[in-house]
Image 1 (cartoon, helix red, strand yellow):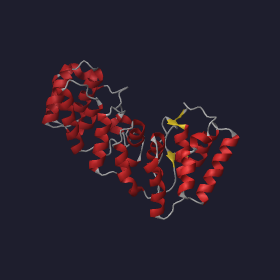
Image 2 (tube, rainbow, N blue to C red):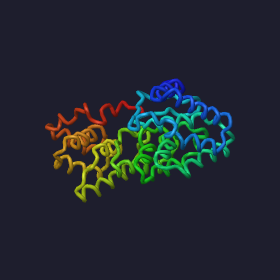
Image 3 (cartoon, rainbow, N blue to C red):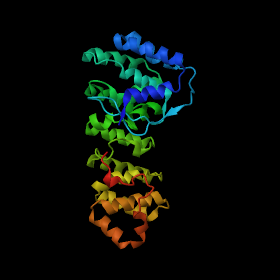
Image 4 (spheres, one colour):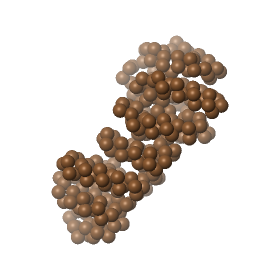
Length: 292
């Protein structure tokens, strides 16, 4: 993981004029020395006005996770607007005040933020002090009807898998399927997989199948460790009907790895499915070896 201050400042400064950078650092230094609500609101909401020379369409991605410091989770920066990166950097510079003062300071931003501000606030969940205090905010973000806000919580965010309970975690994953997100970008997806989630996903798959709607193939990868008769009946039907290679590959993989006797027998009886076992290029390639 990278050194957060050096890397974030390097990324930010390369896109700003010297004057813009100086103005920004002056504001952040004043905030760090005297973290008052009005000061924070002025700096946080004023970021777009401070960086007028930057390309509004710019998106920034870091390779790997950014180490934020002791007691805080790593930060994954994937396809972020520059304003979001700067806003999260601003939030990092808020000192660890007494709990109620710190929570109140940031909650005020949540209460009055517009969409891009909220996306930055939710993307920053891994870096806040007092991490257990943000669970409710996290679940609120999952329920958001604003796609950028919802994605800032669900995708490439290390907070939910560490702090949400099983029910809230399962709702996050289900929401990701409902809204057709890139499932593989959910951090902790393998380690937090569980039988109740698999059962809910099978229910959802039956609904989609009855409505003749597409089922995300990754659903079957999550169901695989918890294969049972009900899941198997639907999967057997789909693998024989579907013309979509990725769907057939997902079900074959689930049958091969799921430790459910009828599924194993199905693969053994249908030797023509051997080619489907090749996971190269699939979103679940290397799934068995993943630790997150």
